[in-house]
Length: 176
Image 1: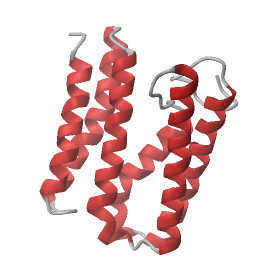
Image 2: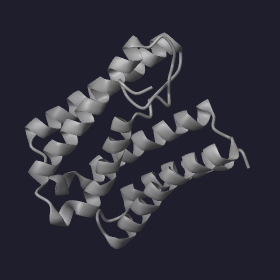
Image 3: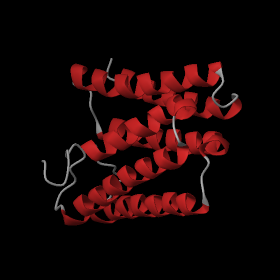
Image 4: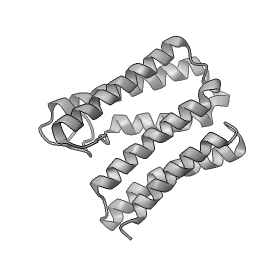
């Protein structure tokens, strides 16, 4: 039973990779995409309820989230109307996220991504983006998404650089 959450997370990684072979925003794509989101919620819930949370599970979850974001950006790029400025902004966010990971590797000798409320909010708005595309102005939406993603990335970097111990489940900069 303790391996179930990690198996679900690995399944999410597999499903995210399947998205690369499906028609973006087509029915099959959306079904698999929603299944990825459902398993993202399910793995952590099961791990907490069964007392099987682990560092490996947290790392797998973060890796699965990163893969999902990368696959989503790659497959949905033509539909997002990204300008050079927004692409640069996304690259800056990636650099800040990388700095946070490198900081954790240096300080705590492990890959780490903190489960802050900001990161959860970023994940949620990234998730709903493909579902909202037919109904939104992409230029406004991408600005909102990038602003929230920047704030959460900076928050995580500050937490990683100022913390004396790794706090994967810290809720925010001002919330322990």
